[in-house]
Image 1 (tube, rainbow, N blue to C red):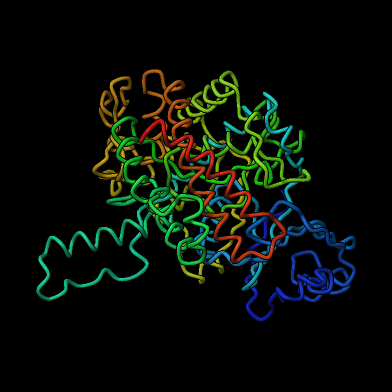
Image 2: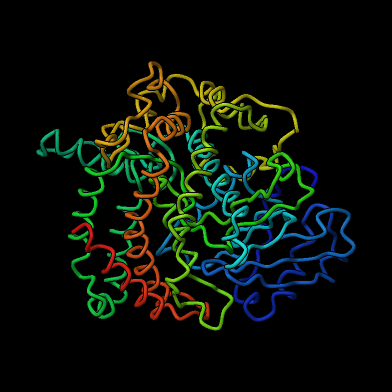
Length: 498
């Protein structure tokens, strides 16, 4: 990684989005002189290349030949995500991942764009991501993201004041309304707290409402007017059938949102094999880890660089052997995270000891996102968790439906470690999640079964996404046909549960 810098918040300059659409080189040459190591001369001669595959933001690779450092940077110009995700939420997740060493650093933050460090490595493709060694590396990266991002998500207060009880309304109804509002904020922010649960159910409900508002004829044509009733049945079915494994999930692990580290990189050498880094966190939330696995498997069926990037090819869905190998690598990675010391992150340790999350307000931009790993061996995951203290012990047990919302934390074929090992209930959520999965009988096979079930939700979610994007996106992509193909898979998949 490049030399650490304090984040440069830049309110006096901004990237002109309309100008970027017409002439990105001219638009960036006026603002990139504020990047550490760049000057005006360097910015005027910037070489700009748009990175394909980003369908929510515009992403560019910018090269400054005369830059003293950061010769190559990534510029992310924010798109119209308001209907689908919050840019403030994405920002909070980006800084959290950066702080933990899981993602790139931010070099400059503009109101309408962000300049990020360029991470050397290879871009994955629809073919390369399914190679056995790479697939195992993705499973390891996914496990680390689920657990370490969750462990860093200390409880946060609601972003808006909890409303006072309305006169004449029974107290229990007031409490229910307040808890519902608080739980929604927790899921969207990624913080844990009373009522926190998998965000996928609420997200689908929200997107369904937006899709009906923007594209009611298409929603009706695709047979989704009654999707919320079906969703309620699916939620009840999954809750009674599977334990709830709540992690902090990426939710969009297609090959364009992952980087294969340079073979010379420290992470690559430490793994003695490929190392993958997850990027682009627009849709990241609390979720059941099975959704992330399922969503990634469905992405095997797409090639966004083909002549028909919207087209699904179900013959490419992972084979049973590939599914099993992936889940074996995932569970093995959790065991390693629990038993071995992790990378030392001074800022993360201090953050954990103070029981804080990254600030949710824009003022957080004045904090450095570059408190990077110093290369020293840090505490184990369990030790990091203990630093969070006891204040979150009431809801850090990954197997408690009362604390984590939807889901039943047990099935006839599984035994959670939290029910058999004293003290687990006092562990922070990240440790509890890893212990709950690793301690479950036949965890690998159960994860395979859960992921295949959760693929149903993946199809429904991205069907609605496509209908919304067709109305609001400027990207050249056949969103409507994409949705038609996804909804066909949804209707087939749901039959096994409804």
